[in-house]
Image (cartoon, rainbow, N blue to C red; front, side):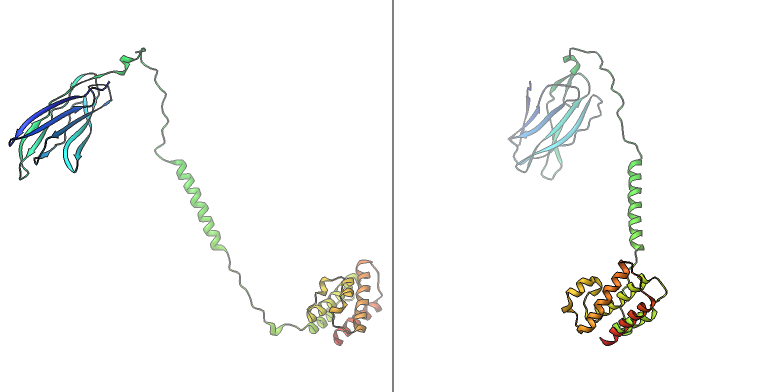
Length: 286
């Protein structure tokens, strides 16, 4: 139930009526409730009015907030939020607004009529008036944020290690090849033939001899003979610009070399020397 009590204080100023309206939103409440107390000026013409702030030193009643009221850009009143901290009957505090002269100095006061209100306890409405059991302690955050500090240290350590690792990287230095000192296909093949050791395993000997001949044809004619099998070389004979006689001798050598490498045939030293001369002759004739 909300009951509004309005008290009007009328004053005659220079043959003009000035009304002071003191209004309380309710006259009943409980401890801790907020009572809205409004003081407005009605029938105001050109009078200059000042609404001073209200200061309370009472422990039973306190002013929570004070707000000036404007209407159409004109100051017409003030609103207080009153809170009572005890039960019983109370009246609104004494309050007087100031009527100012034309020069801004105070002319006189007009006091607002007090309003009585009552404050009760919510325990009176409860069927059980006994004290409620105490609640346990509420956990609170520590003063020093240890977890945040540790996580920050780990984060900065990871960031620092990333930066350190990035600075330790080495730029790739590309070195331009000097093609003026590169060997020609013939020179490279002849050099490898000179370095070829006949005293090792025949399998390794024929693997190197076959590789020398294939590398020579590949680097000279840009045909990937090192990636071809002997059958593929015979199949793509038309790609290799060799005379038929020379190609036949080379193809025959490749077949015999495959037999040594994969079929474990054992050639004689004379055969090994003859095949070396054959490859040397092929390189010289091409």
